[in-house]
Amino acid sequence: MFVAVVAAWAIFLRPAFLGGPLTYVIVAGHSMEPTLHTGDLVVARRQRTYRRGDVIAYRIMKNQAGAGTLVVHRIVGGSSRSGYVTRGDNRRYRDPWHPKPADVAGKLSLHVRRLGMIPVYSHTTFGMALIAALAAFFVLSGGTDTRAGKRKR
Image (cartoon, rainbow, N blue to C red; front, side):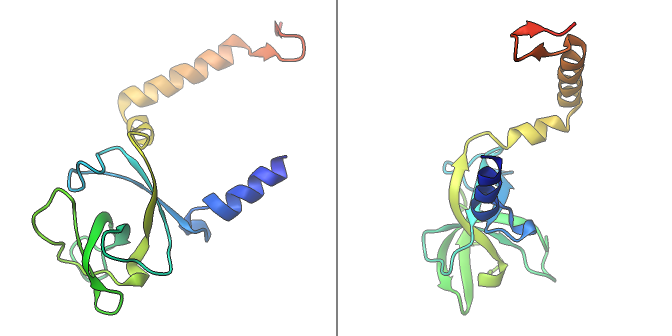
């Protein structure tokens, strides 16, 4: 069973930095409201082609302001040859960048509201204190013996 789960993860859920087809992005900002909100988790999957209306994640090109930053916006024009024209759903103006297919991490394939807040909060003082308190609770409680259903002594 374990091997099957690992194989499924490696084929379908492996992130791009490990050679997989997916890029995971935590939304920051308001440019894609009401479609996406700060703290939402976006999973983008690489595609062979992208078209007008697709929500994509792309990296700002080298030698541009913000180079390397991942942006999640909608394609509103352009082409793979000349570069896509993108814009946030909550913006009146188009992005100054025109990503080409090599710059695109993928098309939005899954979106989970607020799930991205977990890692964001874990880096706050309160989040770290909560994690430490939970760890201490589990260590001090001693766990349970799952075979007998009784507490360990």
